[in-house]
Image 1 (spheres, rainbow, N blue to C red):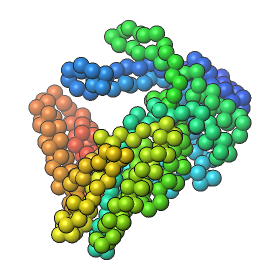
Image 2: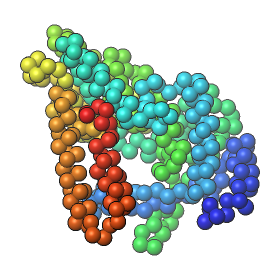
Image 3: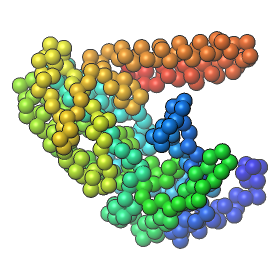
Image 4: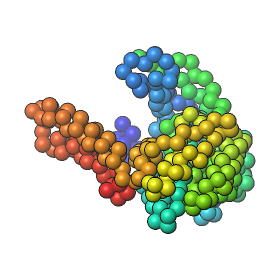
Length: 349
C-alpha cells in the first residue's frame, strides 16, 4: 500500500523527517512496538521457549535509516569504532571477523606458537543498554545538542504490547535497551560498546556486534604467564561490561586451545580460564558466528553438519518434486542448500 501511495506521500513524509532531524524529536506514535512470540521448539512450555519478534511502524524505519546514514558517516569520519568491529558496518561482515581470527591462529601455529581463543556471550545485550550511559557516550564522542536530543527522544517513552491469536495486550513502557527489530538499534549498540575493548591489554580481539572474541598467542614455555594475562583481560572485560549494564553469561562462554597436536596435548591441563569463580570449559570445537571451529582447523565437524543439513533439505525437495516447478526448485536449492555451503567458504573450503 505504501508503494502505491508513495507519489502522494513522499513530500509530507520528507517534511516530517526533515522536521524531526532539525528539531531533535521522534514521533511518539512511531515508538510503539508489537511483539509476536514465535516458538523455538515444537511444544513450548516456558517463556525461554519463545522468541519475541518485534514489529515497528514502517515510517519509523524510514526515519531510522536516515539517522543511520548520518550517524554512520560521522563515526566513520571520526574513527570512533574499533577497526576490529565487524558488526553492522559497510564493508565488514561475519566473514571479516572469522577471517581475521583464523588467520591469526594459523599464523601463530606456523611460528610454533599456541593460541587461546575465548568466545564470550552477553545475556540480552541489546535489551540491557542503559539510556543514561548511551547518551553520555554520544556526548563524549562529539554529538551535538540536537543530535543527542534526537537519540534521547528516540529511546525514551517507548512502549510495547504483545499480539497473540488476534489478541493485543496492554502497552507497557520500555525503560532500557534499544528497540528490538529496529534499524538504528544495532548501530547504537556498537557505539555504546566502542570503549569496552580499551580494557584489554594482552589479547588481540575481534568484535561482531555483541560477540566478543579474545585471542592470545604464546610460546609453550610462556603458558603460565599467558594464562594469567588472559584471565586478567577476561576479568577486566567483565568488569567494564558490568559498568555498562551488560552481563557476560559464563555458562555460554568457551575456550579453545590451538597449536600443533603434540604440544597442545601437553599444555591442555594448564589452560584454566575463569569468569570470576566460574571456570570456562575448554572445548575441541565450538560454533563461532555460524562457523564450527575445531582445534586442528580442518573444519570436519562444520562440513559434516553442512552435509547433514543439505541431505535433509534435498530430501524434502525431492519428496515435493512433483508439485514444484523448475524455477522454484532452483530457488529453493540455492537458498536452502547452496547458501549454506557458500557461507564463509573462503575460510573452511
